[in-house]
Image 1 (tube, helix red, strand yellow):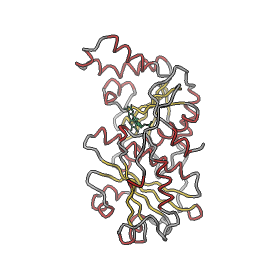
Image 2 (cartoon, helix red, strand yellow):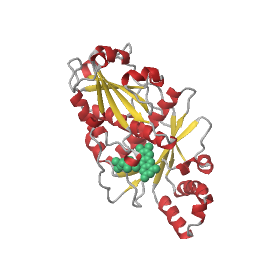
Image 3 (cartoon, helix red, strand yellow):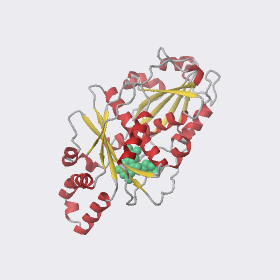
Length: 343
Ligand SMILES: Cc1cc2nc3c(=O)[nH]c(=O)nc-3n(C[C@H](O)[C@H](O)[C@H](O)COP(=O)(O)O)c2cc1C
């Protein structure tokens, strides 16, 4: 797969045609999507597939149950409601993603980040097969009827739906902010330095090239809720590198803006996970390695301060980048356990 091209060309599709989507293709894409996710830990999540007319109808009914109770919808002409129902039931297939919650924030984040990354992988792999997707997190999915339909258990978190299908026309691309405008460099002794560093093999310039492709991640409302902190120099980088860290690695902190609205906050976190996933895929076409982690210290505000993290921000992941010949020793990840069931 040509990751740089697909990442830039993928668009959110909101209008599908009626060509059926083969369940075997969805399962095979899901397997590939899960295997492309590489990070520390063993994330726990599951996925439901609604591809038959009956399951799609049940899904729409469960979505509509809460809507129908609203005063606004009660005032709507029946024709309009039927039109909405038809638009959703006509979508050939839906994938529903659920992350497990854990007793600590870090593991919950790991599970949620994995789901979001797999959703992005699926969108990209699907795009290569002419399949479009709409990532949907409408608040109506928080209704009891919907959560009961998908069998959400205690300790589970609904992450989002991908509506999928073939399409006749892709919408035009909407511009992204250049990564340079969202970039801060922290150099030797914590001072900001320029775009080049002698100590790291991978220059800031080439990381920026990767980021300028990665910013084509889906993100709701085009809020582009990310920024990048490039850490070089022995003193600053030593804080980030664990025992397996490499002296010539470059460290990149990927930071998310935290909206006051919890729903937007969650969507923004998901968007940043998609961007990080893009970086991981883009690095595959370079002679580099990347190690993605969620270190414990990011949950301690005091430890985030030296990196200039603002109160309305959070670090989503630490990326360690280097050249292949100096790859840090890390345990190979176990094969992903794909848990996909039919609704
Ligand atoms: C977490 C997340 C939630 C989203 N939720 C919605 C949604 O509820 N409705 C919608 O129309 N688009 C949704 N989107 C898609 C974005 O609106 C879309 O990515 C953005 O407009 C940029 O367009 P592009 O994906 O074509 O680059 C969501 C995307 C993400 C990552």
